[in-house]
Amino acid sequence: MEDKETLKKRLTPLQYHVTQEAGTERPYTGCYNKFYEDGLYVCVVCRQELFTSKTKYDSGCGWPAFNDVLAKERVTLHQDTSAGMSTHYMCVSCLTILTWL
Image (cartoon, rainbow, N blue to C red; front, side, top):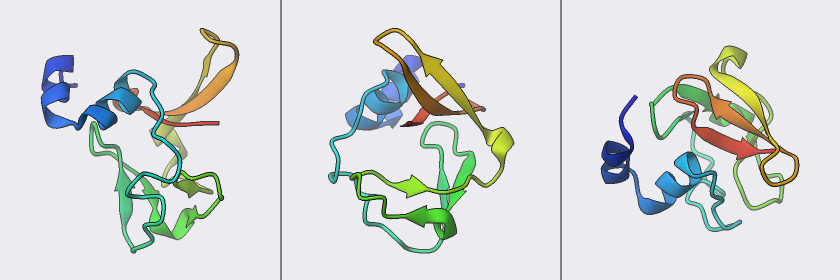
């Protein structure tokens, strides 16, 4: 796993904020929201393959949505009680926050 300074240099400020600081991209603004080309979606931090374009759908929420992962052992659910109760999916390899539930 790369250290925080290396990640800050490699990722965009928004990618860093979302993946390392539990931030949120504004809905309908992300480059993958309306992106439907065939392929794989990978973790921006560790490059682990997580989702396939075949499971992507438009949920109407303004963020990419998938109805399945490539392998369940590649993601984990984490409950965060620091600001109320929320749950998010994380990449198992690098503990990057992938999405909120």
